[in-house]
Image (cartoon, rainbow, N blue to C red; front, side):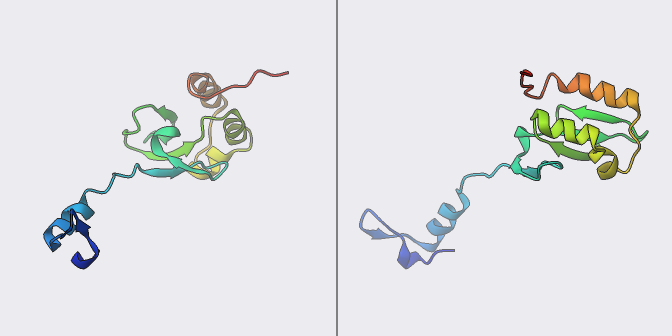
Length: 119
């Protein structure tokens, strides 16, 4: 906390109470999460959350509020391909993802990730 002697506004000293009020008015920070593939730290709302349900299924959590073990992945094609092909999801969530669940995730992810056209 800053000392009241350090704050001067309109040629007057600011009281300690005013200093505390100024300190409490700092801008809110958004929660940060890490992509499990590229390990890049980003704002929580910029990442896609996958969650493991109680019956060991894997779902995309659009609202980011459902209960269950959750992980975050970038909305990039490269990260999704690595996560699905190299079994990042299996290792991180300690489950065996079925081929049907994997195919379902690929279909659902097309709504969220930025696919680049193949050349």
